[in-house]
Figure: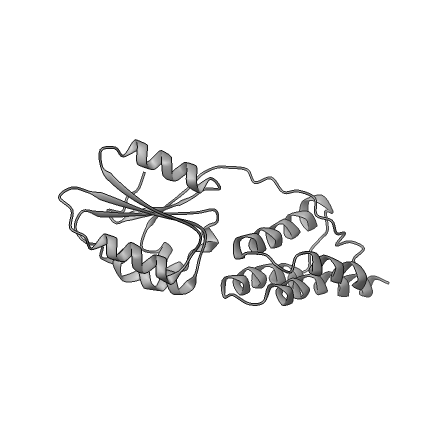
Amino acid sequence: MFTSERGGIIITSEIEEKAKEIIESRHPLRCVPFLRDDFKIEDAKEAIAEAYKSEESTKILILGAKSFTIPAQNALLKILEEPPRNILFLLLAPNKSTFLPTVRSRLSLHQEHIQKVYETLNISLKTLDLSALFAFVKEHDRLKKHEAKALIEGLMYQAIHIEQLSLSEAQLEGFEKALRLIELNSRFQSVLVMVLMNFLREVKRGR
């Protein structure tokens, strides 16, 4: 599957199932899974410590999470570049954008072809007013990082495919900026308001 001897990245929506599949398919090689909701710096340190435990044959470290913090990814950079002898890293996540370019450049990437299913959200971007904006923000003010990213992606899908809006450059850039800010742990309420305000202004200009 992977051209790199260091391992690879697998983009999958079924992280736990994929980890089990890898463990079963690579038997009798030893696989050590590190599966989290949010992969943090302490998880990276634990994985690195496991990587430096000497092995006679190949050992596969499976790092799987819905999101990886930037400090955790930075901590992994050196060992991903030069892993110890007989150590193979497999990183699992639902989105390629989860990983820093520096991480992606060190590993081969395989993306499973799974069609995402987006539910219609309880908001109309075409007729958005301030009342609806703040009600939606209040409803979604306590989301985990991967949930926040999924909501932004769902909003973009709804705008383009469900409401069939012709998005301006500012609106498209707003979605891209939102995903970057979420990765940097910005306050999600503020990020969501920023995205939605682009649509509110569009409505006002059309009046």
